[in-house]
Length: 121
Image (cartoon, rainbow, N blue to C red; front, side, top):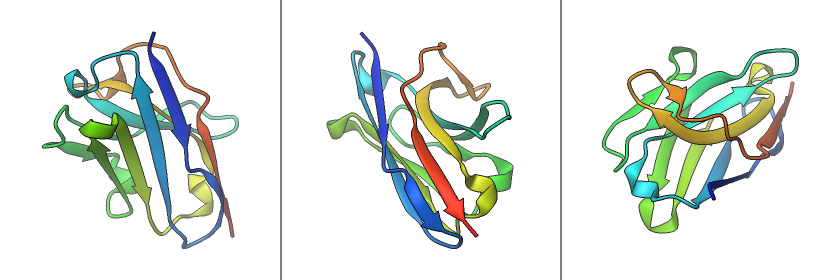
């Protein structure tokens, strides 16, 4: 059974940083590209960042490049999202999922509980 458990969110002041974690289980972690998505209130879920199976390739949404990076630790079955220079527009619930690297879309519609990031200005 696939399980994705996001953590690390919280309340942060504008300009601050956070590192989100996603602990994965129930599947062979190294067999899948992984990604982060976010959903702000009243908006659709959007792509944030992706990382290939062994971490050689990454992709970050154009609007977030230079501030967000993604990494993974295969030994820990965990993918991370490093967020710097946070802005109020980054306020959202953040989710991880397995992802198709060619389209930056999720493999399936299973989502964890997410982790809330709130940036105060």
